[in-house]
Length: 66
Image (cartoon, helix red, strand yellow):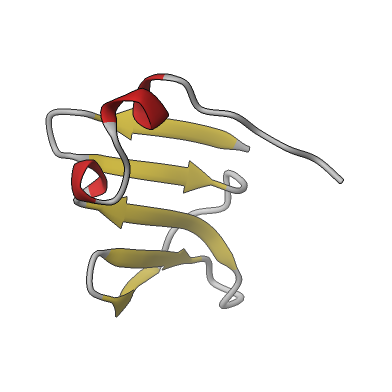
């Protein structure tokens, strides 16, 4: 999995695998899902992240696994 913060475009992107993206859908305002040919989600993009999280949260991302 890859995580990318694009400060210029104010976006956060999670890429789950490297399958080719064939379709994208905005499922909620500012939340876009990318799908492969088998209709599996391969990426999730969040737009306007600076209004969803503070600078401290964006500068220090934490990951948890269960």
